[in-house]
Amino acid sequence: MEVITVANNKGGVGKTMQCYQLACHLASKGHKVLAIDLDSQANLSSTFNLQIQRTLIPEWLIGDVTIEEVMVPSEGKGKLHKNITVIPSSRHMASLSKLLILSEGEIRKEAGRKERLMRMRLEQANGMFDYVIIDTPPMLGDELIMSLVASTKILIPTQAQDYSIDGLEELMDTFEIIKETENPGLEFAIIPSMVNGRRKIERQRLEELSSMFKVTPPIRNLVQMQESISLKKPICAMGKKSRGRQDYTQLWESLNL
Ligand SMILES: Nc1ncnc2c1ncn2[C@@H]1O[C@H](COP(=O)(O)OP(=O)(O)OP(=O)(O)O)[C@@H](O)[C@H]1O
Ligand SMILES: [Mg+2]
Image 1: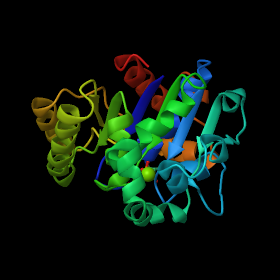
Image 2: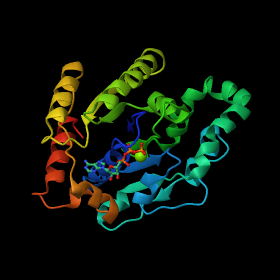
Image 3: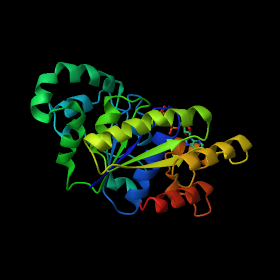
């Protein structure tokens, strides 16, 4: 089972977009996919047509409920949804930090450190899914750290803009620490996201980014991407000539997904 976290501490860079498109792409190829929404904004959940009153993810992570109690079948048009199960989020996700503090003693006994909780809980999903895709909130918090410890790969969508590139260093430091301490096999890929190649400044920043890191083929800024989310129609279900689909086909090929 491959566990892929999509992360960037910067907001609005296309994390949820990447999660949705990746989950649908893998499901369309016949893989069984578990999509986990760890963001209290619950954007990924609503893209899968799932609006829930109260998520039990914090309770699942600390061990009070089972994975079956947090999983929901994906809702959406098209056959691919049969292959997607979602662990949806809600505003209640925000109570995670409080619960982690209150349960500190038990967590120490069971897992040693809170960072290992997601990895432990996902053991319950082994054999049920081929891929787990995790959407994370825009901050370097417990949700992100736990996901990195549990993952085989981290996908980092990044805009080709000054502040986005600066923010990357902080995330890469965290990645290195997790790799050295808890998860030596963790790999990363930086995905230039929402790129507008007609703007000279963005082309320059993209070059700068590529000189600092190995980056994947970019995803362009296209109205079609926004339509994909509002119509809840994944880009892999669009026509072969669709520019969005072409970008994503290249991206997933470059990542062997
Ligand atoms: N390639 C793209 N072209 C055009 N619009 C895009 C593209 N990717 C994402 N968007 C739009 O940009 C906005 C932000 O994207 P998204 O919600 O995926 O970012 P995010 O990183 O998950 O944000 P947050 O940090 O708030 O969770 C959304 O309205 C989305 O539809
Ligand atoms: Mg998001």
